[in-house]
Length: 156
Image 1: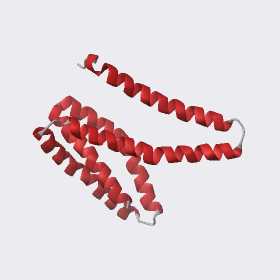
Image 2: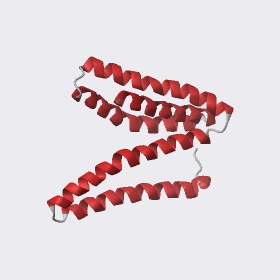
Image 3: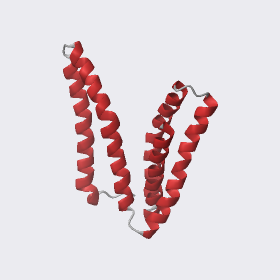
């Protein structure tokens, strides 16, 4: 199951990379580096999950490699689709996927940590709550600023 979901995730990453390269080489490299920074810890986590599920190192590497190859398929489709119509639709799909990951994976874990801290009592709950919300508000603020001023940003 984890290999299939990771394969779909990598396919959409590849779509975003392919569409970015159709827009410009600089945008393609920027998107590739951003996805690499996100994928490296993600793939390590998947590798550990596969090992804990009872797979050997070779099996875990093989299944992780299979799911990673889906990125190349997605990149091919992204290049074809980016040349056929506006790559913004692909970016919207990839952005929606990243939002889904945040909502489906991160929020339940944050709630679990908050419940554990609340059950333990004391001020740790308030500290944890503050740190979590500061991180979310910082991320939302950065995205809002980028959206508001994206037309004024000059690269190179």
